[in-house]
Image (cartoon, rainbow, N blue to C red; front, top):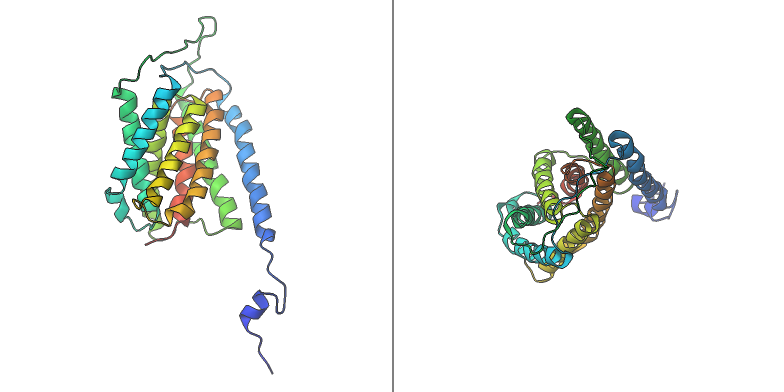
Length: 270
């Protein structure tokens, strides 16, 4: 009696051949469904109330400051204590996001950005104050939705996305760094959606450059595409929340959950 090696069956030497699309395609559709489903959910929970405009500097000044801050964040982040986290690549990314977020918030507060202007809401269209309880409930539900939207498709179609072992204590650290970065981006761009997306793109480029020049581990280059997709995804959701009149901190909170969960649960441990 001959025994066929297990590997032979896996590559098609017997039994059913592997079918990668059998998992990836449904997971991709599920991911798309979650992404689109956020729009009616946010509208239902928050409504469509206008937010007052905040002062905003000219776009070139904002982007120049963001580029300078991201470059400095890449330098300082490489020396941050987070690089010693037992998360091989995520530790460096966490330090970069934390330092860059702090610098963005400081720039928004103290940097002498020229010709800051604002467009006030007309007196004929007063901004209604949203009940704090409603905002808190929306924050809990939308953050939970964000975790589900990113964790379930990844876990079912790509790789394990469950926080086991050391990942439980790494998750809040990574989430805090993501939250600081997104709050800094929100403040620096005064909630202007496309400027906010541009700052995220600058962060992706800075992270890529830091890996190319050796400030970050070379493996970061393999993580950058995932990071870029997550940054773009959370920027789109942030725009939806702003149109729904969400408080300024809610896009950062929801976006932090979206960024942090795959970083903390799927990146390799060191």
